[in-house]
Image (tube, rainbow, N blue to C red):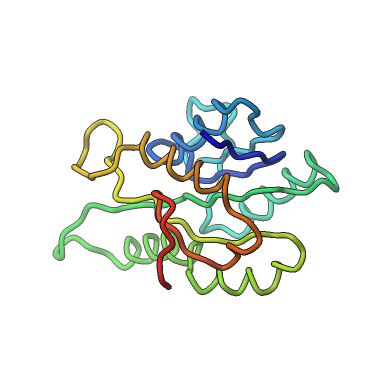
Length: 182
């Protein structure tokens, strides 16, 4: 299998499921990234996984400083934002706070239009910006019945990332490597 070749990677959402699977997939490559920054919301018991909250601007700024300290002028080669959240509630128990948290975490970190804007803004600098749909992944511990396993999604996403090029900038893909319309 063709492998992704990058020097430094920043991952969010490494608490479990797809995020943790992608982290493991990157580490299992023949030539893993020289610098791999994994971040999670709940670092309890995960000393190599610093806390990161994509809804908190101060947390984001702290993460940027940490990466800059480590990689210096080499910069970050790949940012994978996989942070996401769900809240189990009913119409009777739903709160404005829950809805705001889900919207902020799942939408504002991953706006499709933002990918297009970033591609236009930074594409000429060699920064590749794409959106990837990992599929409906079966959650860990068998909670749910998604048609795609974590392992299938991880392998597909890594294969896709390994074959992207400058001509892929601003595009949208699924985990199987199929181009999707915006």
